Every structure is written in C-alpha cells, then in structure tokens.
Length: 147
Image (cartoon, rainbow, N blue to C red; front, side, top):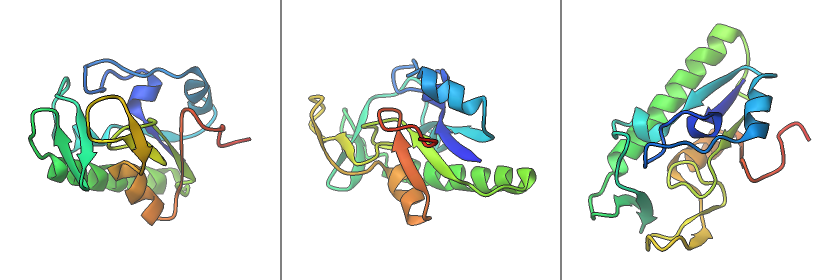
C-alpha cells in the first residue's frame, strides 16, 4: 500500500483550491492499493488557505501566522489513517508519492520561506515524518516507484 498526496490524484485540496493532477501517479494508483492524503487539510486547515512555507523549522503562512501545529496534527492523522488502511488490507505501507516542493510534502527540496518561488534543500513536514518511519518517499517529479 502507498501513501499518495491527494492533489496529485486530482483532488482539489491544494492551498489555492486547485490540484496537481499527475497522469503517471493516477496510473500508478490504479495498479496499487493506496490512501489519498492531504496533511494540511487533515491537520485542520481550510481549502483554500494562504500559502505556507517553512521558516526556521516552522510552518508559517504568507500573512505571518504560524500553522506548525496544524502541520504536525496532519502528519499524525495521515500516519494513523495509513496504518489503519494497511491493517485492513493486510499489507505493509511500501512508500509514499508526495507533492514536490510543498511545505508538507516536499521531498529533498522545498520553497525557501521567502514566498518568492525559490527552492532550497529540505523536506516538508510529512515527508520528514514518513522518512523517520523508514518509508521511501518520492515526488511526482522523481522516478516512478516501480522503476
């Protein structure tokens, strides 16, 4: 079973109310069990919502509001729901496909905290959380998990 960012599957959970539909991720989801997640929404943030970037290890929106606790709640909620679904399916969680550059889902590169579309090295909250759990995490821009 896999954890997949809902926005990559066409769910309108992105900060601006849209999605990041990605064809290869949709095709992958048709061949594997998965759980669709949005840690920001699952942490209690609305859609749409002000954009967030990571500043000094904290999740801060463009208006200066610290939403770190919502991001942390979202990580816990995603993990609990994923473990439950994996148990129901009798499967292990094999990995995650998460949205590139996102402050919650970015893998290896995230927006730099200046709200200027610049990226820096780092992981989003969920990507870091899942890596701590020992999961392989990739983004929609990286190689397919099956290759």
